Image (cartoon, rainbow, N blue to C red; front, side, top):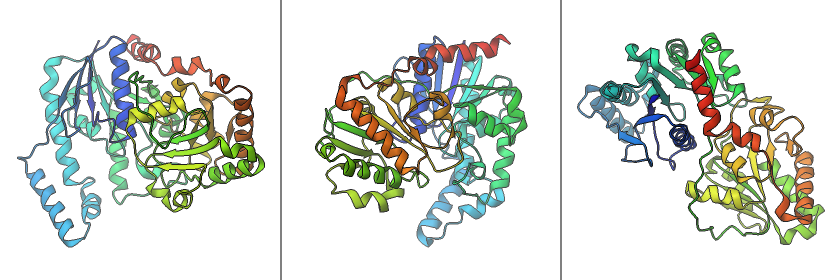
Length: 411
């Protein structure tokens, strides 16, 4: 089978979405499919063993000049008018020009004669998906991968952002769900969530979880990380809705109740924390709490393997349909997961209701109890503290991925 992949980016250091896009491409290759990747990463990037082509922005179109005029106007006047333009047109001139550029590249790549065209996006952009809507002759081959709820206003609370162009965005997603031959989602709960808003999801969907991507290159351990300690690691972007305050309070209570842990227990936050700096900056000088900004993706992966416990922190909510992009890496790291999130969440669904180290993200007592239990087990035998979930490793690998895609074509 030949698969044409249209990815908004394959630069693993620009977003978590790009990381999971590359992992998916890598495992499609491992599964034995013949691939061609078109990407809009704004720089030349090659993936081992995969034919990759950079889609270049069309700089000769009227839309390009309009977008640059708007950009210059906003920079000099400090007046952001894109929101108004999006309320009228649905999308910015830049977004529209980008999608036209991508659509042209897809059309030119049809000599590859793909059996399947897979669109991958990042954030709330969905540029490749919008490009495919402009190519109705290819809809019978199109699989639209939808990585998060969309539009923003259908996110579960406490996410509460409503775009001024929300009606356009609703129509846009409805068109995707109706026009694409197949829809794929990284989680069961996200598929069900989107189906509740867009009925067409029901009859054409599959679940392709985020994929394991193993990096075997040795990495230098950052100076801020101390090996062979009881280390709790939260790696990843701390969004405004991911409040670390309760986790920190629970950790401090754990230290207060277990003073012997002060010499060998540390809580690490690695990644962008701008939205939570008002909290984390208070602990910059705490001997047992380490706050680091961005570090390269490959180093993060190595830290996840060296940490004693990896932390998945989700929003305080009734439901979390998201599968975190780092979930497969945490599975392959084979360290216990301290899961802080809603009762109804994709992470908890996969780990199982009997998984012991789960609590609500604002349950300080529950978080402390789980940290204490993990610490006691670590003290008994630090080398025996494992997640030990080969079933989840199988769920996120190329064998299950191939079965999902082959089953679609067997129908």
